[in-house]
Length: 92
Image (cartoon, rainbow, N blue to C red):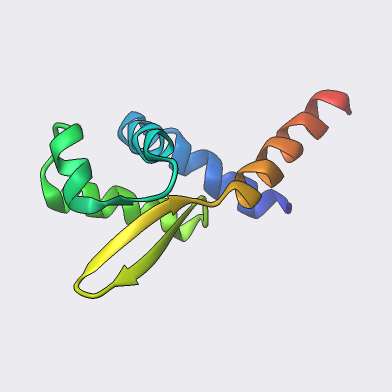
């Protein structure tokens, strides 16, 4: 992972609402819809959509269109690459 991508992910993860969204997606294991998140997190739908956009831009979360809805799931490959990047900093 390059430094630019790690920086973008770090900025996205710096927001507590985004971390909460990731936790909720993780709890569901398979996927989660934006409307589901609205019931779990005390934020308006436009705010949730904004945070999901930030997370999908970093590729930590993958959005899949399903009819009129969009389902979100974690991208474990990118998360693993990010964790490996951080661990490499510790070893250096």
